[in-house]
Image (tube, helix red, strand yellow):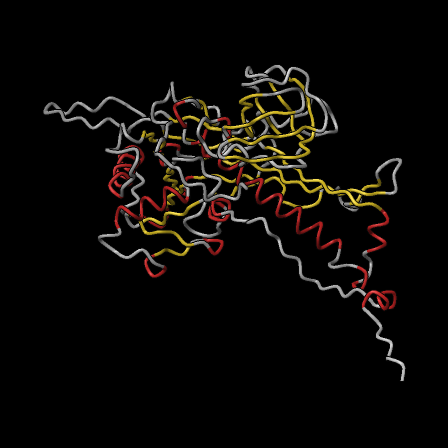
Length: 438
């Protein structure tokens, strides 16, 4: 009797169908604690304002009210009024664009032919790009600097460090990845060397080695990298970002002017700035008492006391510093979920001096921020959504190609009505790299 013929998988593959699921797993961590808590609704959150006309104006009282006088003879006191000045916020425009080939649209029209709806993919990815980009914006200083070139072997290869343009602020690849369109400036932030696309990145410690798709003439150490638009060679993000915590809190005393008011003219228009190891006992070990000092200095300067209204404040730092702070009080109380504070966006914060402390991998290394949320201003002109006018349509035909593109935009600004209500401690030793950079 002849042996039966066994049909193998290879032989039958021509009649088999592919089975697609609608599961799409995003491996990159989308953690946006600062954005979630700044945008929280209701009491205790940032003021939400609508922009229009020439901008948003507000009044800041910058000196102490004085004038009480005693007189046995009955003479009235001298007229005195506190200095009151207007601050002004404009608007900034941020965009995300996605393009689709015409064949992709046709090929993904049915569920049987695609893992997920192409519309769902485009919308979801654009929203993620916006949220992660806003984390970068809110931690920055409005200059939009992604890093500093430490060295360059030639016009297409560079090693980048110093995210946000601040030495030691974190790993060089924190704000850089493949697929980004960038512009390179000389250190004077005036001389534009050129634009290119990052084709690949490789991270090692604080160094991020990038390879550019096209040469940037004159690329050298100390050059500055910002994001750019490929539609115009001179259109870059330099100085075009909304304000961030760096310039709002006047990090290092480098940002005297904010909202058209200058700290050098009005001393009260400044945040509390402490340096670890100088204004604290030890730069290597942050403690709860360091935070207490920061709280009291902010309260004395602004009248906003986190000991009285702890839910109005947020402590923000890196995971490494959060861990060290927790280690400083492990002998006194438990560090577990039962001792943490619920925050907006599903986040929890460690209870430090009664205030929620949340770790954020986008926070500059070695930094602790104390932020008074009700003193923050979020100015809206256009919520995040597709760029179109009335019924003009959100998808545009790409000239000369069987392809289409859509852009998402937001018009907004970020600021504060009371700069003195915020504070920071910078310069802690932070050797833990718990972030997403790989």
